[in-house]
Image (cartoon, rainbow, N blue to C red):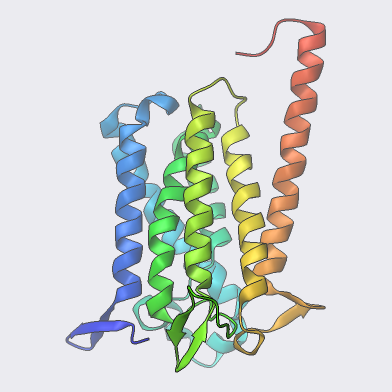
Length: 253
């Protein structure tokens, strides 16, 4: 599929870029509307959300460049030309947002991350759809009724699978946010859900369009699997801590 809609001077404006922008906007709007969950005013949530978007974009780009350092060593300037190849690493953005929250809101950074979890899922669901036009997540050939035509062949719409999984994660997180939960539980749950979905979705990616790094695993599967496992261990530790507190006294608020 052709990803470039039009050009302004020498800069191409892509469908993928527009979907990313729409995803950022949707996530930011949802964060502002749920600002009270983190003890923030809507104005504070808007300011914080804009900082997190910037941090996430820089972190995602840096993560992509580091993961593909060999491709950028010959031409380092390409590392900042994000509008040319659009390479972003999701977990690089996550790491940058965690650091930004610790720096900007040291008194309530965990609560802020929990408040960001559902908006992040909503934004990702919309933004990843642009990958269908951007040529990312090239699926394996298939004759299933929902196959999409990419590069002259019917293929799995892997980006659509990820979008559906993210919508599901959003619904789960919104439901969890309305009931009592432990600090950090929403963030860890999102990382488990997203990591599991990404690991599964890569099973439908065309092996000729990516490279295995450990046995049959792709780089995306490896990073997503590690994050999901670590977040799952964190949820288990939270559960153990809550059980211990319940035995020794009143449950945490």
